[in-house]
Length: 224
Length: 136
Image (cartoon, rainbow over all chains, first blue to last red; front, side, top):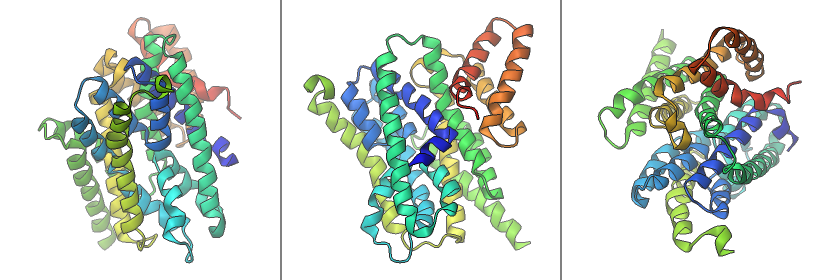
């Protein structure tokens, strides 16, 4: 649990959730609603997309589609974290809470920290890390909500901009192979191009194609 | 209590449009990813797609910004993120070092630029101030 304090991402997360709390206040959601969304949704980009699409008057179905698409990224994260967490005797139900906690920060931090934790203690470690991060973010959400009325516009904007930058830096730090670096660069570059097509599933198209191109480059280099 | 939580309608919206879409993908990872080996080639691809989708979310927040961020001009959003990322690359991939570099750059800028640069500086530095108090 103390690992929560060992990572700069906790502070970044804190600021991100200050922003989410503030955004929820500005779009007239209740405090309980946004706290529940932090605890149960537990994915910064999804919450920002949910609050901002609903706040801008989109229908529930449109918001659900946008959130579903942004959440696809959780699937490969879960697939890549779980083999590191589990040991041969682990039952699937023991991993349900671990799975719920997996989001960008926990993905990055568990891939960084878990190799140093003995395998039989990794589930407990991840539970502690997850609970710690969720608690910090609940406090930040409530604070951001309460401060919203007094936050200057510019500070609010700066906090919201922290979200993409934090995600960018933490992903960049976690790039281990050529495929990861290429995927990050191509993913950033392809989205503006794909969004010109106005397909409604822009993130999915650009993400899957950029990821596949990156993997193809990685595979091609391995063959040489 | 109703005041605190809001009405049932908005809670249903949270459940249907917020909780379920995220949890469904997570649980699918739990069910389908169970047998995948740590070092497998499939995981390299899956991680590349995850990274690229996240990059897409980043690009979309910058392209179509939410809330107060929409009031900041586009070039300034890109410049602020690019500056932060450049500082990160220069500084041995450590987020702590970005703080130090940011302060050096901030000192320089203050002497040279005004106007919009002041706004850019506030945006770039505002978020790093969070770290400085906790630097070792």
